[in-house]
Structure formats: C-alpha cells, structure tokens
Image: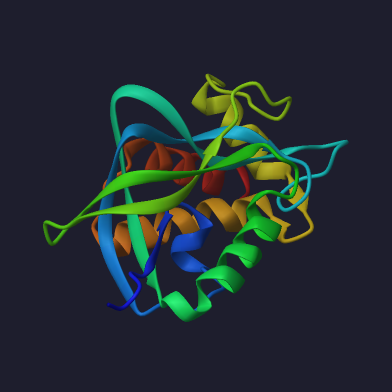
Length: 179
C-alpha cells in the first residue's frame, strides 16, 4: 500500500508562493479558525523596530477559513516539512498543527497548518482594521514591503473566488494610503 500524501493548508503567502513541489492543489476550508492580521512580523514583512503584520490562523468558534490545500508526494514530505518549518517557524509565533480540512471536492484530509500561538509576544489579535492598514502601509522586512504581502494575498483570494471582506477592505485602504 502506498503512503498517503502530505497535505498542507495555505491561507496567506503559501497560496501564491508555496515554495515547494506539490501534486495537487484544491480549494479547501479549515473550520474553527479565522484568517486575520494578528501577528507582528519582525522578520519577513517588518523589523523588530518597526514590525509589520502578517496573517495567521486564529482559533474562533464558528469561524472558517478558505484557502488552498496542497498535496505533497510522500517521497518529498520530509524535505517539504523541513522547508516549511524553516520558513514558518522562524520566530516560534506559529504552532504547527495537523487539522481536519474540508476539500472543495468533498474529501476531508488531515493537513499541516500553521496557527498563531496566542501566548507569543508577536500575537496581536483584535487590532482595529484602520490601525492594521496604517502598519501595513509603512512596514518593510526581509522579504519586502508589507503592502506586497497584503496585495498578493488579496489578489489571489479574488482570483480563486474566495471572498474575504476584511482583506478586500484592507487592500483598498492601503492602496489609498500609499498613493
């Protein structure tokens, strides 16, 4: 019997820049979590002196997050996990979890997902949207401007037909702030 694939859930930059090979990409929904700009970024999209904001999965009763599920061939599962851990666990603000994921085609799989550690110093849930926009408009980190992260994510959600009213509002507001 063949080993099953490793499934990975992408809800932010993994959707438009996975950085790993995959055999299948499917729209998916993760129940019990919301996609929010609830983590200060001190590496990729900000600095310790001027943190940016990045998306994280924040546990919330009744919430769900739509994104992409990526199937990774069993023979490259470990190198893929190594890559993801280096990328996502850079400051320990994310927790790696294996969670049930509902695929758009009706399948349910167990997928690796990176959720925010609400006890971590970088957690900042509940920041009002207008304050998020101000931070995102000015922050720059090792992977570039925070605006690029927001715009790429919002554009990819739109292209995939995934509605996210908060991200749409933020993208419009940040575009106004950076004109």
